[in-house]
Length: 311
Image (tube, rainbow, N blue to C red; front, side, top):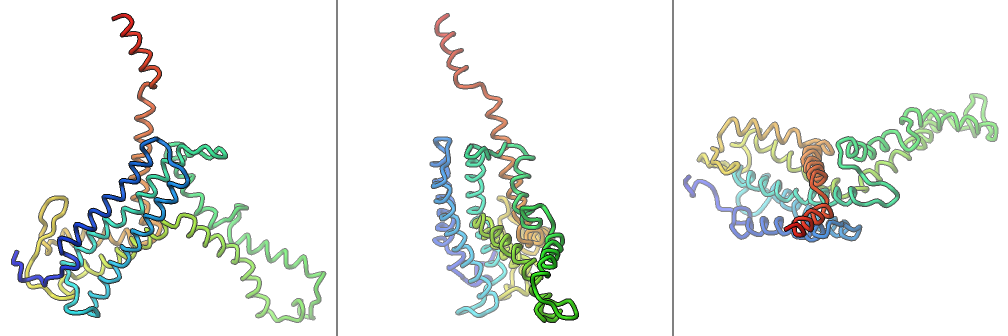
């Protein structure tokens, strides 16, 4: 590839920038190893990883925002090229690992934590029940009723209290018109939902921020791969990208289709976390199955003593 066909952009492709990004993400695994070394993960350790992951994701957001600004030509100098945008997306994939670093530690913590008897078994059924509970609570609430049923219940409650309030000839309380009463009922019906929505979003802040980051990254990916020649500054050559150790031409139709499909799937917030959940929960379940098949340490020591005695 002719190096002169791509404008230099050391803020993205510089060896120092890329090395710093790689080193920062790899070093994030050091606390994970330290916390798992003794087989126990405390609440304070979970909180520490949470703060670390949120900090990493904040930097990741800054990189994406700057890429969008440069792609529109609002930055200093030349706008971003499609080649540099592809590198930004590659770095964003690595930055998003902070989301699942926290989830990995959290999964281990919940499989060992027996506080209030809420240990999550290392099974698909156990984790499906645990991960789907916040969504069920968001939609149906604690009572298990749907939003429509909750709204109807609130309306009936308002009607029962009508005896204690004055009404006009049309049945409206306190002389209010129908237009005045309806927004109040809607507010009473949906205020609990708004509260549950806030709890749903803030309950696992790392997952929420990580999901938004994936959606933002996917939006840029779709923007890029929909028509790479028209993205940012035009480049008059056909550079290559390294995909899993192999060189792939930037003009490859298969690369365009695969990238567009992948970013399209990851565009929807919440849904884009499912592939990561499936991968790390699979590792968690397989690891626990492997441990259960191993002989206990006490049995191993007994066998070893018996061999030493007869030897």
